[in-house]
Amino acid sequence: MFKRILLPTDGSTTAARAAAVAVDLARRYGAQLEIVSVIDPVPFVSFPEGGGEALAYYLEAAEEGASIGIKAAEALASAAGVGFASHVLREHGPAVSIVEHAQACAADLIVIGSHGRRGLDAVLLGSVAQKVLTLSKVPVFVVK
Image (cartoon, rainbow, N blue to C red; front, side, top):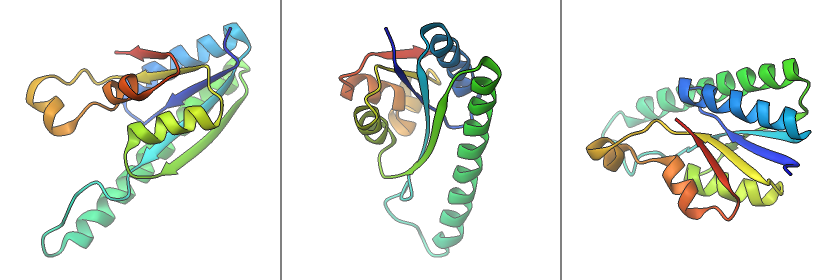
């Protein structure tokens, strides 16, 4: 049923739960796991004076989160005997990058964690999972 499952991760607890589900599905269906983490190199429209330090801090934290998430998902996949490929995508717009990568790697399913943001948090911080659901032509399994 599934041959390639795309797992976006950001190193969060929610992404870890999604990784467990994705690995289980990949094991059950004999699918390959495609693990990605997206780092948006330009998360802010502009920085005030001294913003270069803030951007450097953001990028360092984003790289660390990506590494943590990918390594954790790889460990789960290895333990379950699931084949995988891992990628860090450094592109603007995580949701669009995830959907484009799903198409490029011919994923049959996207398994993504959702932080469950509501109200003002959802407006200010956005919901990558919601945007992926809206943009994707591939089925999306959302783990809360």
